[in-house]
Image (cartoon, rainbow, N blue to C red; front, side, top):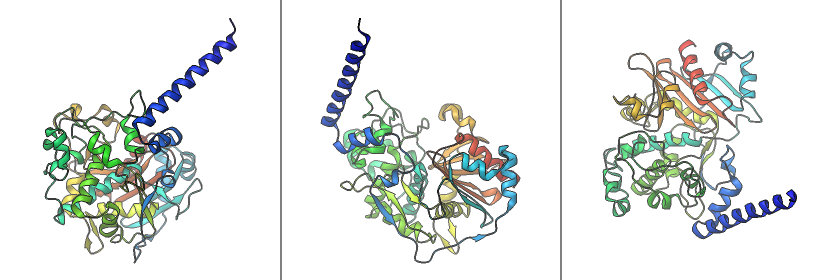
Length: 400
């Protein structure tokens, strides 16, 4: 037997199968989607350079934090992490930006791995927390009546496809408990929900046509990237403007964002924000969003987000069936982990808690109201596991 011939034939068969699969995909899916899936592969923090976007413009009057660098930040983090040098730890663990704000003053700010203060970093799923905030503002302004509204009040075509959509409320989308099916990866690749919600060039279409109910709403937590897309469509239909425009006028300008930013869109043709990810900005401006929530939605003398919404969005959600409602890995979070209106929460003593916006590769806007503290970390990669970052932040807030 000639092993070279056998190997050669095997390679030809494999290549043939791949080409057949690609040809079939091109019949079913848009070529742009097939191209992105095959050549872009896994998402990375430079996706903002690949996707088209809607611009966010620097505020007419930028807000600048007071700065008083405190060497104790390095000392406490070194002790907690076991590192001999905190800056070297951050550099080695693929950090781009790291900012600590205490009592409204920047006490630590540094940049690593070829990133500067004016470098663009991305939110990944931290964008979901912005989406949640915009829903709260839209309710206050009367565009949306309540989180208890059925989503079919605003997206009636869903009910025509399946009447059970009438049972899903806006609240269920915010809590990631809608009962919609979500399979991150499937054997045929192109029909995997994680890939569809990342790369499909018409996100409205897949959110309206590719969503399927498998459980009653409110039964359990299931992380699902169709939820923010549905919320984004509700925002644009009710406000009559692109989500980015709503963000610009309701949050970006009011917080005095120092730099331009953007929100990535699915494609120029569809022109819809990637609601599950893709707010791109400078780390110091992300920090302002954290301080806004730290201060109960108030920025200087302006109530940007209703205080009641901030509280409702972040306070602990610990149902009696906790172990059935949440996946087991929630137990790895400090305190007792929970999820509320697209923020991740961690309980402290009595009724206090910390919460964070969180995105892939370790993007964090961490808020500790009890300690009047905000921590922002952006990274190229996680460096260390998510639960270890959160434990560091949680312990730092306790000791600093």
